[in-house]
View 1: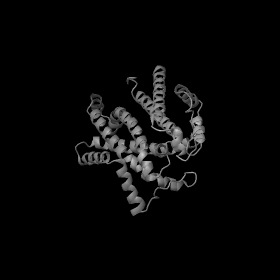
View 2 (view 1 turned 135 degrees about the vertical axis):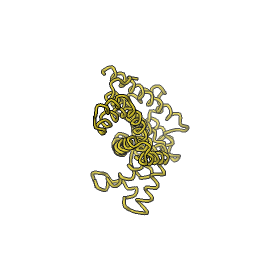
View 3 (view 1 turned 45 degrees about the vertical axis):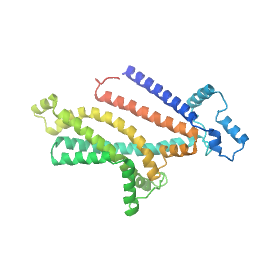
View 4 (view 1 turned 120 degrees about the vertical axis):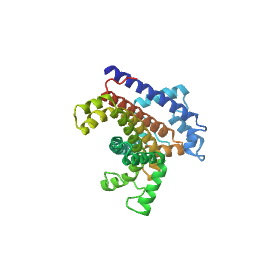
Length: 314
């Protein structure tokens, strides 16, 4: 187990270094002068020179690269060119807002997906199964921006049950914050729940015909115990792998969801930084997202290994 953990953490460190290096080079390949873009055309040459010096753009390229990683290891993500604030002052709260959406949506998707997938598998080729399969296909087929826009139109404008596009901090008003969570979470949950439902159904159908399940039935065990203890646990292995992929998909989907519902998360911060060419913020957000995705894959591998110690390390 120690070798497994060491190898996984080493791989995660290498992946993070590669992603950070790619971001560093790509940002500097963008045409134009970052300092001039940040200050605007009305800036004087002296102001541009001072900004270039603050961004370390006047240094040799390799020194910029080494300095970038040196400052990063010290927890210095730089200063926003637009707001003048340190990136670390705004990034943690934005990460927290995005993770709140993603983790709640994942939890709801997992619970509903496993329950519905189990129901469909135990009633294979029956009306309930056909209805769930059709519903999951429908959920997968609808793009996130379509679901979000329709929900916003219906429940925030036509039937004003929930507050439209108004983020409220949970510290200020917990009830209103929960209300603002509903529509974004449903939007993110729709496709993920459908995927997990289909994956659980397929894995359950395979395990229900396995020899050890038939043996358990022949011993006279109650059908519910056979399904929950023997079939469902084995079926969780591919579901966990699918959940890892879905979690990364949910993180990517927040770009549209945060834009539609005015949610102040990582994605909306990144989009604003790209539009304003705020390079320190772009680098910081991309690195934060990459770190989260790498950690998600690491945790997914650990959960799979805990469920099945025979799982391969690669």
